[in-house]
Image 1 (cartoon, rainbow, N blue to C red):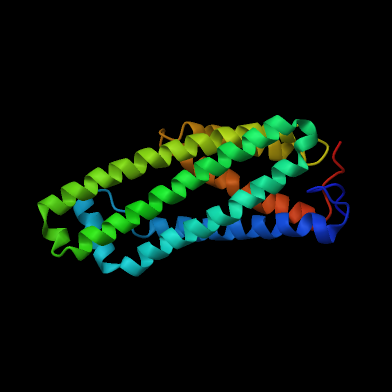
Image 2: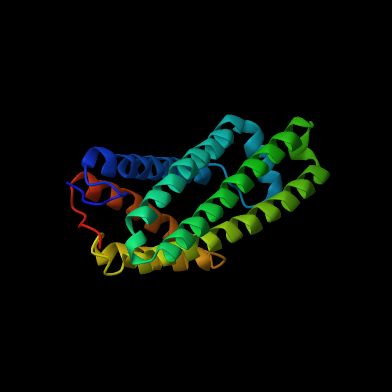
Length: 221
């Protein structure tokens, strides 16, 4: 039994949505990471050539991220609801920051994939110096907006860590995961730290989902 999770004292109303969104966000985030790593190349000309030969795969990357974000936003909204007794304003702020951050990442990815489609469909793109130049500009914009989204979501994750710490709803080790992942997202310009953010999110999604399904959360406040 999960008490007072999402404002309900019954598992039918309390844990199911949080668990479903957590599992969905985690699974599609894994799918995005795997797909994204299979096509991204270091230079715009190679990136365009790879995109042209694997357009469906790259489009699927964007779809995976879109679904992950669509599941993550309500997941964090419900998570914030379950922690609102620790501070309604802080819970709302954490939810808004992480939701806006994820939305920015998803939107920038969708725009970038759409632009690559447009460049490639214009004809002879991989062999065109101008096409490579355009791809480089858009890739730079994509990376910059992605870092902004990661910074916002990282700050939101840190706030969730504060809410979870000694919350009597979730264990403190999950709060530590939020702190580590939040810092990784907030300073994601430093290479590997965005990977730390992704791993922390996966642990959080699956960890919370498993705990609420098994009735391992404690009654809030």
